[in-house]
Image 1: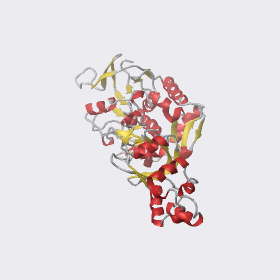
Image 2: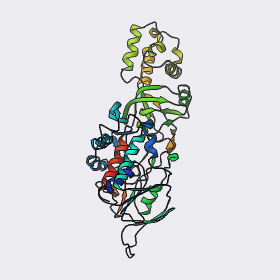
Image 3: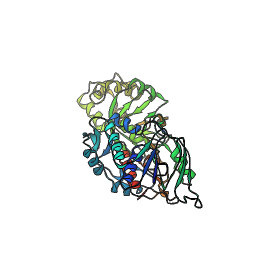
Image 4: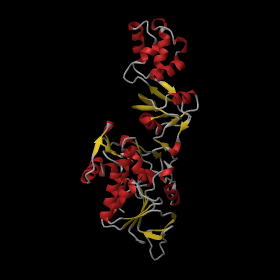
Length: 401
């Protein structure tokens, strides 16, 4: 396999899917991966259960500078086709909220399925292989087309080269910027990368509150830039995490405040003014403790109504109650940043899609060079969307390499 038809750099979700798709068409395929085993990110995903797709896949679930780019691939290999593949391997799975599908047993089942498909199709996988250089063949050489690779396990040559190296997120899993370096080498432009689906951190008084409430999950609606998500928010020792925060992080820019509605099923103003009439002798914190945890209510009391902590509802001016209601409905928090790539689930942006064919994932200016998966400027929401992009983009390239 020193001169296969196709070499795929990266043995993650997109790379493995592309590999067996191409091999099933009769191509000889070699997967090269720098780590000691492939699919590490698959194994850790979904808390070890792998949220492998979602029942409701739409282009609106993806961020991309060209929002139409992902449509072609997602239509040609959809969630139902992947579910069919999962079922054909006898993998038991279940649906959680928002159409998220998880393995009943382990993410190992999904990786085993991909590896079995690769083995049956004749794919060769080589791990612990560092790529030292990639060069397009000299048109005047004996092999005038394709790519030559120098690696820690020797030289290779291929007709088609697929970059499936992922992004910068979770460097402990072997993530690197190698795919971006290859893109730049061949003249492709890159969009500025940042960490996505990542917890927020704080350096102001909210950090202390978060530490005190660490481990508490609250059902909230969180918003920024006109985008909102209704999910759990989780207080941590460093700030705020949980599905709502992770989703919102992909839309947040440094310096912006985020809004948190702590009572998404209530009209906070009506609720408090109603309590003033029906529970005149009660304390506000006791009434709010019917809706929120006591620890959170005490923290909010310190922030928003310390002067009225021991005042009966009847004695609190309406203006003050309306001010508290505003804080409950739109608590403005200003993160100092995020936890960055260390814990980010994805890397936002990447290889500019304007330079790729949406049908084949091939570079428009560099024949035979393909980019798939997370390295491309397509990022899904939390909930199986990024895996579906990996399967779909891998399939798209696998049909044409």
